[in-house]
Amino acid sequence: MKTFCCLAIALIVSLPALIAAGPDSSGKEEPKRELPLWGQPVEGLRLSLRSAQTKYAVGDKVEVQMVIQNVDTKNRDVVDTDPRLIFEFEVKGPDGKALPLNKRGKEIQENPRVFEKMTLRLLKPKEETAFSLELSEFYDLQNPGEYQATASIAVQQQKDTKKWSKLSSNPLTITITEAKEKKDK
Image (spheres, rainbow, N blue to C red):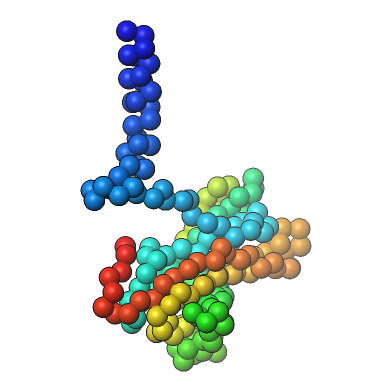
């Protein structure tokens, strides 16, 4: 009876993990989802660049999300405004070369509305804030292949508030496929 109880308890305890990593309806083993990747912490903050999809068809809007997390033990302020005005991106095309801004990206960069609605957002320890934007609004992502993107933002230094440091994200790989190929979600 003791052995049966121990096995039953072990099964109950491990059941959620077995379900999460078990086979899907096709019988194939479902890959474990990794936690979001982060860039290196700077000034008590870290940045993650994410996308709900890994594949987009040519012509799709490529939406990305930038998440800033406070990994410090103290409250931190971050700039809170239109993400197009505070984040910088580096996007490399399928050939590995950095892509230039497209026409719309240049217009936004040349005519920033920086002081339109710039406020500070207080982040408590372990708290996150997220910004979303359409990356394809800034870069022509029209050629099939893999693109690598990173985001960065300036953050105020804690010891000298007149100085700023660069906070960079993890690299994000986005695959652009021919329009007829199926996208994953």
